[in-house]
Length: 188
Length: 376
Ligand SMILES: [Zn+2]
Ligand SMILES: [Zn+2]
Image (tube, rainbow over all chains, first blue to last red; front, side, top):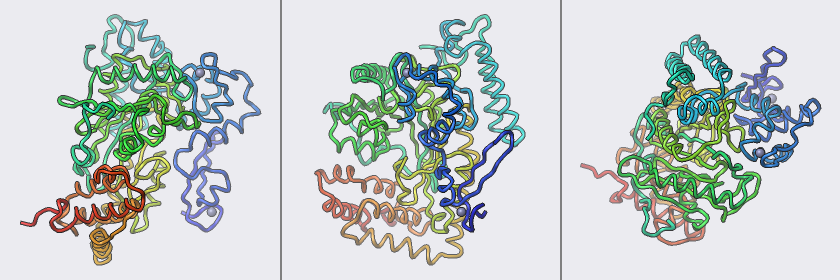
């Protein structure tokens, strides 16, 4: 494939969704660099921050300037790309959300493994870790979407794995005897 | 290593990923899974005070040593990195047991240094499982195996994670999953990677195709020593880039079922093309490399890697029949600076290393050296 801008072979491919429309770019390395597109796969968080967050700066509310637990300022995070403590995720949630979505291909929510403590100490313990029914419904809907996609693409092995995951997620729902069913073997 | 009586690795044997066997071992050198975890109630490593780092280190060390890991018969070696000399740390980096960053003790923000409280636990004798404590995250678990074995490395690391959690409380959020110092790892904290040997694709000029295919699937391509290293000796590491929003099994599946079969197939086709249509050029290139390895008096690490890569191509295509893949893998490790000095038994400057490296490789590959399969 030829570069959109010149006669070179295109080696950088970018697909972005702009107001619901898919925009594809196919560029050679030189032209990609000119346009400020990162050449390597997987943009380092630093570049994402510079390109995305800084571009958004005008529209970003100036709240959540620092994390209440570790006092990391959002500007420090922007400098180094590292958060200060687990609570930073809460403190900067509004700012991190769009950034993480970009960095993780549109993902907004974790699905998959969760601490085994989730299965321990009954309903209250589990909910405090993996969230309430709303969170669970969200996870189930994400998994269901991925399952539909896999089936459509005839990726049956992947579909089977997703079905397992959905079953585990559904089984982790609180009702009566919510014992350690989330994970295979019992607690030692 | 800081305890003279404790378990120590055997530098030339035992290591699982050096065995050179397993599925698709002609192309896939090794498979690896990594999990990033942090303890609840502490700042992440880059923000923690030295006292907090020490406390995290103590908690993790006692959990790692008390629980043990690596299966029956395995012994856990604990390395206190703040107490270890540079050469010992470099050795562990060369063995793919920890990162450069962990060896230096520096955070990507530039803070820290060699004295920072941090450690490494390794299950001996085969070094399949290891855990870095206080790298960018409090815990980085790793499992590495020879050949294509992503399901197996995931199963093992998943179990190790479960067992560690019995004594440690992880930082976790319902929305973001396992919380990590850098948000690029948040969610599952899981990174799956494979080390591929792609000499024929490079010779035919199709490496770009692989990189493009990988990038399309948001997989990263890196060199033999990970991030920032170039693909010395035609070794390429491919790994998933995103960690949020997909179950671990699906991240693994994307790598294993969608990209890898294609890349393995491309490389095998390229090898077949070389054998069928450019046999003489292929033989020439392999035999020149073998000739140089057997005759050179000075070798840099980089040149050794390139020549050994050619030798490996000769071995897997059957052009060279009296050298085992395992031997080539071992030589690639022994050619690295710290290993070379360990085997020779003394510290050397660069110039002396080049001579010692050439001599070591030459003698191993000589007709009666222990790197040759006896004819019979
Ligand atoms: Zn161009
Ligand atoms: Zn914080």
